[in-house]
Image 1 (cartoon, rainbow, N blue to C red):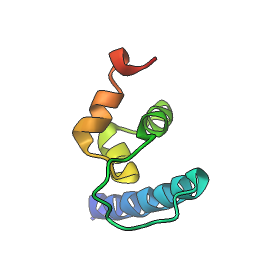
Image 2: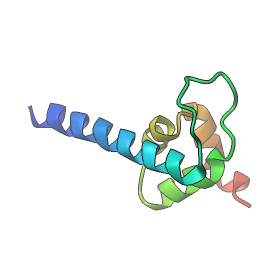
Image 3: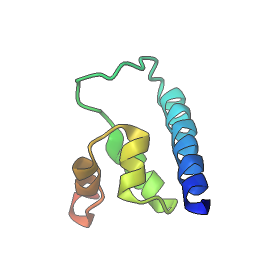
Image 4: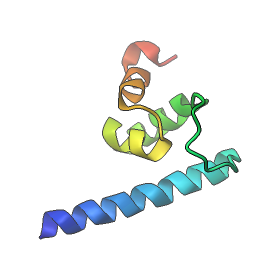
Length: 78
């Protein structure tokens, strides 16, 4: 029961974080968008430095998990 509650709370917090980030970067469109997400790297590194895992970052930013993992590799950090 506790695990289910924690999962639901986590999902809701991810939505709130995603909405906040979209507001900060000025993204006004909420369509599913087929286009590539621009500027995810900086946000991904910031969220990772705050202790979030790649899976959570991918959910928040809407980027594919593999892309987030690639962005977080030390070689890609410049």
